[in-house]
Length: 275
Image (cartoon, rainbow, N blue to C red; front, top):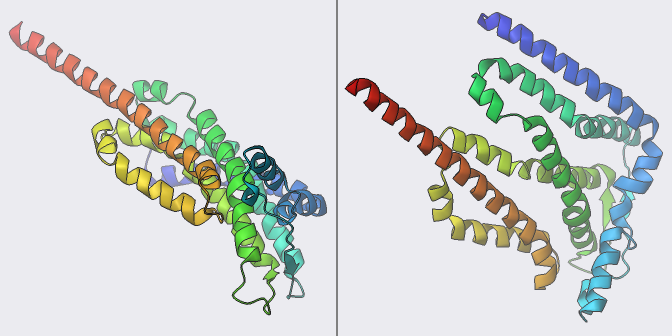
């Protein structure tokens, strides 16, 4: 195929993906009120699932500071068309999240013809694995990162005389941005697989910088969680470090396979030269 033919093929993959996102976005837009009341604004309530479970854990281990307590977050809209535009934008953002497996499948269909048969076989299940990791990351961001961030930023005051009145666009940008970022971060094992395949992320390289990764993960957990206790920070740091270790295992397996194949090819070349 020529370069223009490749662009034409890519265009149709993008068009089909946009159609899927739009179709899902229309359904979400119809259910806007339910989604806002029960999903997007849920982390602003003190009876949110994460807060209740954290408080129950604190009572079980006798750490009362794990209970977030009562807090209220006032959210307002200051633009005439603000709520309509936000609900419209949010519908298509959530449409991308829901239609992510199909979008990833379209991307895979575009890349697949350029791969060798062995590469296609080794990449079997990439769409399923990528989609699962993405949704696990979205779930982690929604139930752990977002509520802690909302509680900390929503209740932090430089003075009691200055109340927090949050713009609706700012709130949604924070929550959806954090969830989507977590979804992408949880693609780390898949990224490590492909980087190891091309030799950029070897097991030795990752093992060399393991201590640095631990420090970075702990710093991220300390910034994200509002409470200074080790329990809440561990709830964030452990899954992130788990992703790093999964990437390590994947990288080791891929690196060993590459080396074994290289040795086999070298042995075959020596046999051919001798014969």
